[in-house]
Image 1 (cartoon, rainbow, N blue to C red):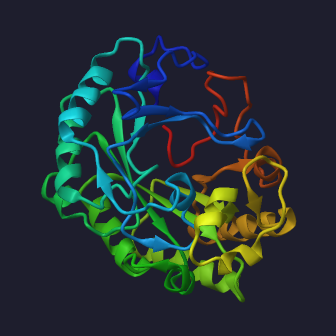
Image 2 (cartoon, rainbow, N blue to C red; image 1 turned 30 degrees about the horizontal axis):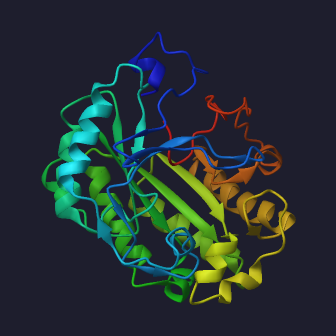
Length: 314
């Protein structure tokens, strides 16, 4: 359901009037440069870090190399949510709990947060994860929670996503969550151009659809911000990157990026009749070459990229 469906009077281009609640526990993300399609969204910073050791994880740079999980006291998190829920100006929003932490790295804490969202029907909680710790979701289905699983081709995951459950286990968890009624989104990100990458990602897509059909899929490619590369312990993935002028670190070369997205998107459309596809932190040029219109950039504090239906927004 879109924000305007919840509140018909809501102006689509209305500026966000609040930038944070609870001293940054709930914070509006709008750092992405205007050259990159990335609709602004709310971060729910209930924790920081991640127990997995993905070689390219941007948290290595964001957290200055300190990725060990640490948690914000629920006595601060829950009142912050109450304040946001009670705010009359704040438009219906999705609160992303997986921007600075894996959302399921502490299910006992996240179950309390998810239960809090069930006390209202205006805002939704987004869980973004590489985990398969979904028992608490299955034990009590919740209407205000969206679950998003980050996936990669098995060969890629085995090489660079150290400590994370296998893609097969994550897909099985996603299937279970979908079967009990949750909206389930998938991120195939980053697509890595290893040898025979086309076959590896064809197989990943087929594995997903053999299990269930996601509500939407967001595609991404390698992004190497300066601090990410500086603090990463395994930089073997950096060889795929070239200098980039988008203001969002180094990227795979433009022509190859377009090929990565085209091949996967075409397979989704032609083999699985699936077109609910978006890109993560990509240029308008790439979006439009793929035949997808993300909307437009309207300036600071506006509802930019209004046609983009990617992982973190409605």
